[in-house]
Image 1 (spheres, rainbow, N blue to C red):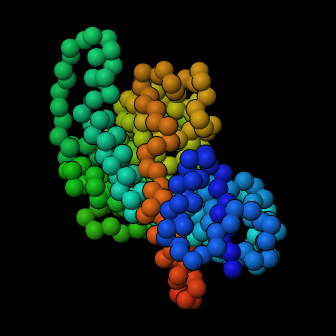
Image 2: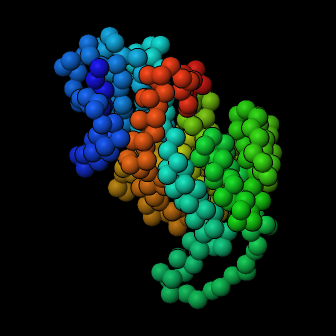
Image 3: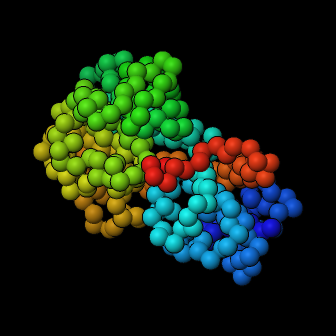
Length: 309
């Protein structure tokens, strides 16, 4: 049996994955072409090109190296009926919580404003609010959302979680459903988006929903660019409806030169770097999943194709 590695990433990143997987899967035959398609039973993928998994008659398992599988599921040639496992990497979850904490702290304390004042050569300290006076809404309570919510709560923030279905997290007030989302947005000082991209969440932050946010609130999007209607967000920022936006993901990546986000005084741009998968820890996750699959044990983090994650 062969394991197909299908990655549409840069050469350096691909080399890192090959090395990490080879170390975590000693004795396995890892291939990067479909020349011996009849021998391939498992595909390990990272942003595979459309059609990369077509024509594999013995394919029995697809292991994603990425947490998001929206692009994978959008491939019309994706083999039907083959289980898909998404990556839940503890190191990636920790990194996401770190970035979220940095963004929330910087917004709460006005550090982005101080950065602008420095460029202008102005000394203008402003008042300081306590963390427990800031309501932070965490949208999406999967592995990364849970860890982020708990990390923020540990720093004293008033964290409120939201998900499409009821989810319980000890010590965190959680909500579910469309009506609850609107109510939460109306009271949150900072909205942190960690939702999966599905047909229901695509374009979630459009003009109507941005208008439901608390006046002067800030948006942090660390999930997918397609969650936000960029023109509507720019309008909300220009009119002062929203105070600031921290954006790690965009409709088009890399963010095109000349895009309004690059120079907007109320936008902080990150190059899709909030939480990168660590090949070393992720390769160990792949090895554990492969071992469970071969032993006939239930697989963790199976993707529901209908729900989109």
